[in-house]
Length: 220
Image (cartoon, one colour):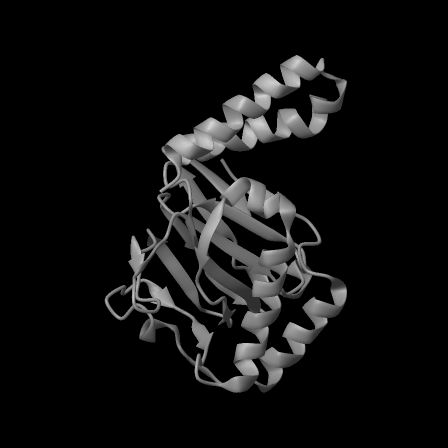
């Protein structure tokens, strides 16, 4: 199950990150994954204070979004990274690493996130393609939109043929590691939000009972 959020970033935040990208130092993207021969992009230098501001903007948006919290159930969030794909760059079919070396304890990647910064009209190619069995979902979001999807899926970024693709990516460790359990809890939460005030109070209490105790059972 995917969550697409339009206007995840405010226009002023998109503009700020775009300006940061013009000033920040970028390095070879394979520095973060040297064993993946399909990776050909540039990432903002994590030691560059200018680049760090882009990550802080994205992290603040993640922390304030109730919609994202209800979908992801975040426990830990990796520092978001600004990525640029110039013409000819791509990221072939791959699966995200199960654990990321973040802090004293590795972060388990349960949910992957891409936040789109560049206007899709300003570059050609560069679609995010997520594979579900034999089916492929192609995503090219507008500036400030975001896509959240399970890190367990094979995905790729198609070659950019003109212009430059600019995104921010991050990975989230969920309190609910199991994808199906997260989906069920999200669906129950949607029912509560949409129908809860219309319910008889006893039925609403029963729904709250199920949600609360499933959270207790499934959280890790």
